[in-house]
Length: 141
Image 1 (cartoon, helix red, strand yellow):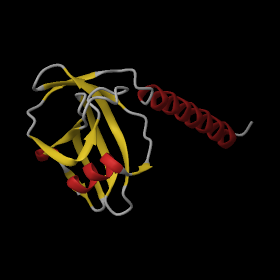
Image 2 (cartoon, one colour):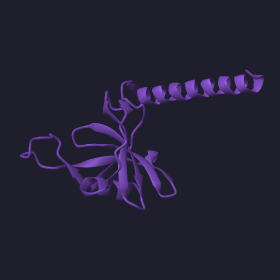
Image 3 (tube, rainbow, N blue to C red):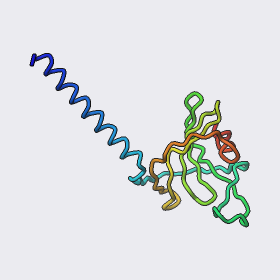
Image 4 (tube, rainbow, N blue to C red):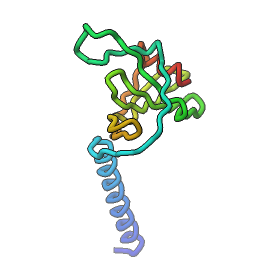
């Protein structure tokens, strides 16, 4: 077999192996298994139009507002990233498009204290923002 052919075959096998390894790692990282803990100071602001149920599944409890931490809002063109807390104290980092009004969670987690959170990567699920999601997105934009 000519040397050029052997070299090409070796490079192809290495490239294919690298692609499979990368695909495996991406699949593992997006599976949402590893939890990350972080300390952070939050400056929460009420989003009055973003109302949710503090006890999901219990319609008898009055709706309460979501909150957004104002110092961590990052906008790049039409895209905005922001952190929010639901009425039932779930931590969510959202990615939204201010122009198309689509939104998806990036991180989901819980509070371990007033300045400590534990979260994991969320499965991206772009949706047209409606109701409380639209209110959060408009506030962040």
